[in-house]
Image (cartoon, rainbow over all chains, first blue to last red; front, side, top):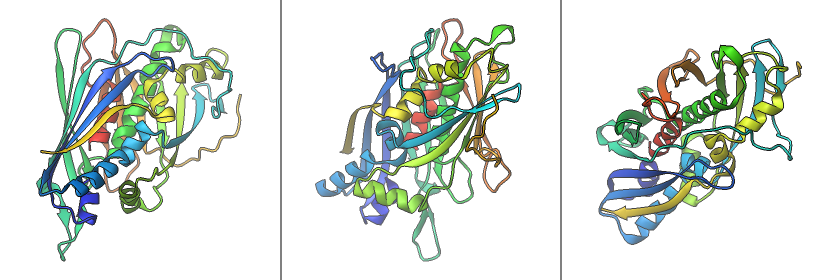
Length: 266
Length: 66
């Protein structure tokens, strides 16, 4: 949003975002939905707000979760050394049975760190800067809170938005497989998921141009899942069926996680 | 079952591993390079223990917020 505002010469002084995360049970197994409120600060006209609202709707990471813009190819490896492609999945494959606890209700709030914005010698913005993100969610005995940093900076002090989002996707994959696969007595030790991300064509500038114009930018990635044991003990079809239950994989495949979206000038 | 796949031999960009006690370690920027690595713990939601780190979906939403 900061980059789009800068390119569009919109006087955006500051920005915050809050996501309310809700646990959902639906027919396709989606585990959660989000309600997003973006608050803009500055001398912003209604037409500029509408332009930024469109950019927010087509935020590249948001597209991955709301529009299913990540096209991924899976490979499975077993610790025995066997390997098999896991994409595409059979059309008639049914999701694996088993209990996955609900995703707890909570919030994710992003605060822009204004002084991390970077400029070149001519004063042109070169990096949008970083954000402090506060995560709050319910827990069994008490509410819990964590802080992470993410964004764009030339020195790479924090991970970019996409790697941060993808790390949650991979972690969700591990969490789901650890719950559902028949690991036997050894448990899920050794369960690993890796992601291979080709460079985005056009980079950040292209992503921001797509967002400003309201275009979906599709990206291809490859995911490798390594499970302990052999393909006889944990067959490929069982792993694929378990993946059909993973909340983040469902979200990346189908989108639809955005329940409501507001962009307001505050 | 050893079949050819399209995934090459380059190092991965992100790795997530189950590390026990209902926790997962995800590391971004695994390969040597100018930026990273950054490691995050996420908690597997369960009915027995408080999670010690955000559930995975929250980390993805954090990326969206960034």
